Length: 117
Image (cartoon, rainbow, N blue to C red):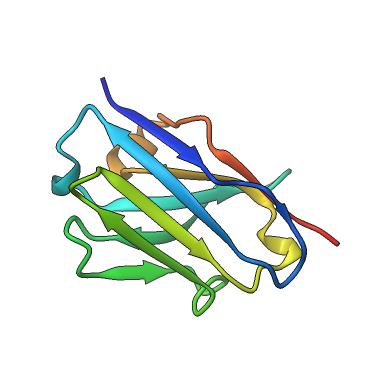
């Protein structure tokens, strides 16, 4: 059974940093690119970052480019999202997922990030 468990969300001030973690189990982790998505209140879920199966390639949404960095540890079956220079508009529930699960609307519980002074 596939499980993706996000953690690390918190309330931070603008300009602050957070590191989100995602623990994966139940599938061949190193065979899949991993994505980070976020959903703000009243908005559709959006793709924030993608990392290739072995971490050699990453892509980012324009809104987070230069501020967010995703990485993974295949031995631990973990994926991370380092978020720096946080802005109020980064406030959202953050999810990790594979593209195939996202297309089937299968999601974990996510982790809440709130950026507020």
